[in-house]
Image 1 (cartoon, rainbow, N blue to C red):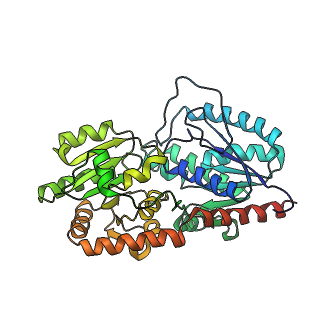
Image 2 (image 1 turned 180 degrees about the vertical axis):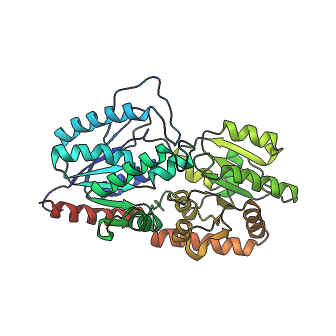
Image 3 (image 1 turned 90 degrees about the vertical axis):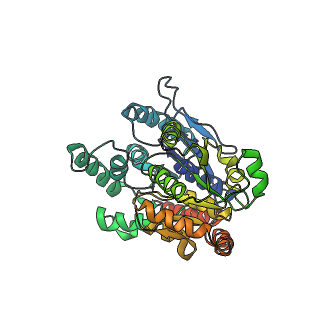
Length: 394
């Protein structure tokens, strides 16, 4: 890398940047690589916003497509055709050494570009395509569409040059369930910028957000949908309210209209603040308002990037007991039985009743974030993968 500046073209079939987990991974990877002297360019949809310092190229505007939230859409095929041609245009001018494709559809597009250019292809896999479609209710398990997408997913996994999985369990699934050779997969879990995400002035943050000062605050930051566990989160809030536990919930993310209405119907409006979509750069300030952080995510195939931000802000984390969460939090997490809203409420209530435990966990999660989960270290790992791929293709 000292002899030439490595050039990487990232392909992102998504409305980047839209303040959610997948986009944070793309942005932080690119930023860590730029700090190492790698020349990174991103090609993406027409929606979203450019992040400072990273050249970003977009497909032509499609006025009727305005979806920023996560999840599949039948509009995607023609958006991806536009993305293919835009990426081809950028590729010819930029002449990258590596194509890094995010998500399965990005990898499929990049396979066509690889055939035309011969440039090695790195697939950044953030979970199973088929499982995501099922999680979002887009297809049904066992259906003809399910089988078709499984074939497509297997084809992509087999054809790319190398795969980065966003969790250790994701890497294991690729090997055990999809037949990908171990030598072709590396787990590169998400990280956090601990200089930006750090503990702040809790009372000042609460006053700024008009949150109660006389009770603990539990925070959630992420996309608001079923597989992120937001339905369970409302059940937990209802359960604790019935028990008379004084606790306020700050729920940050979008789209929030459905859950705001449901919370009102459940009589929870007084104990929940819906903050809506939060600019990623403002997230540390919002998280500083919390005493504890929650992630009742029920997807077993995706990473859980919000935990890194929680940890860096010194927030004890209550989560379901899954391999992904264990990999990130280790023995610093507070674990509830998977999918069990009542046990989640039990674990949260016990944590709230033990200030000393909260204080100890706050210090431990911050330390773990600094020592094990920095994006600087992740960038070095990624650069090593690039070097190996380019040497292999010389």
